Image (cartoon, rainbow, N blue to C red; front, side):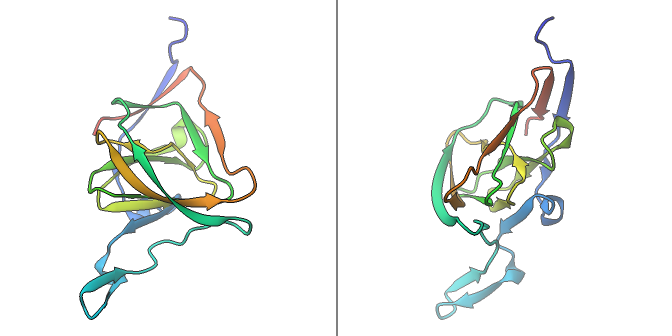
Length: 169
C-alpha cells in the first residue's frame, strides 16, 4: 500500500525519575530532602528545583499552556528543540501526562516518560522533544521558557515511511 509506514517504532512510557531524565534535563518535584520550613513553620519551601537557562540575551517568562489529549496511541510525527533556552512544564492539576524526548531527532532515539501529576520537568536547552502531551480532557501547565532575540525553535519532521507510536497508558 502506497504511503504506509515501512517501519514502526513503539515507545513504552517509563516512569519519570531524575536519573532516567538526566540526559534531557531536570525533574521538578517536591522532595522533602530539598525543603525547609519558612513563614513561622507554616510553609515548606522546596527551594531551587531548577534554574531557567535563557542564554545571555534572553529573559525567563511564565506562561500557561492549556493542553488537550492526543488520540491514543499517540503518533509522534515530529520533534522540536529550543537552542537558546530551557523549557519547564509544571502541571497545575495533579493529573499524569506524557513527555517524549530524544538525544537526536531520530525515531529510534525517542524515549517516552509517564509523568505523575505531582511532577514537572525542565527540558534542557537544545534537547529534542515532542510538544506538550496532555492526557486529561483539559490540562493546564505553568511553563517557564525564554523570550528574547534569535530563533529559539527548530522542528524536525519524521519521514512518512516511519511511524512512532507511544503505547497507551
